[in-house]
Image (tube, rainbow, N blue to C red; front, side, top):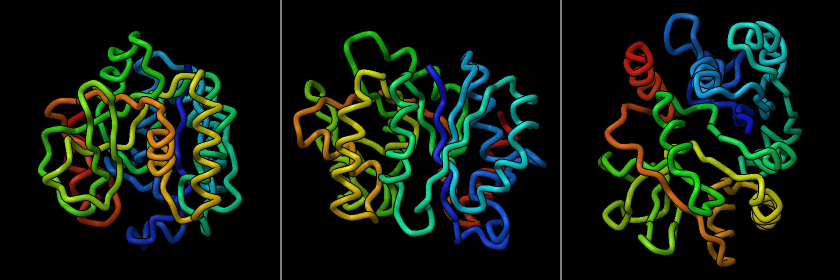
Length: 245
């Protein structure tokens, strides 16, 4: 098993930080970045290799690669997304399709969360699940969240931001365990998704799988403090949370 981080996004709502940095390298606790927190989580659960999808301002990640490897005891492989500033992240995750064959814990490069999330996903393995989404069933939902409807027997039925929050079981927080045996089917679903519309999310690829009859499971993370950092208000929340880990 390896880690996989989507860190190709520009994060324009976080300017001026993202004038020179990808969103994943925005600091949230002193010099500690979002990427630092994720790599620290991966190291804590015993992973030794991590692939990072890079694109916007990728040179900043390349410059820090060796220092990050030494700090966290990880071997990092950087994978270039050549369309990071043109297309959405369904294509970005597809760029990491070879990494998924090794079984991965995928983390969005803008999600500040504690290592308990990764531990919850690992604990949920073992009953034939191929893809397990970390799900917040506690948070009060609004329009912006990536909402999920789950059937107790059939797993994920719907995943989209475009849903009445009252209908949702919870929010997908941007962390997934993907078993290697799901790699080929997921890659094909992602390809179908971005070929249909390059502005679609990789979660639309999950929906494509569900539509094909593939079971996508969830693991509720409990009452956990986390945040997806899209703007400066989110960044302030992320800084409050990060210093508590």
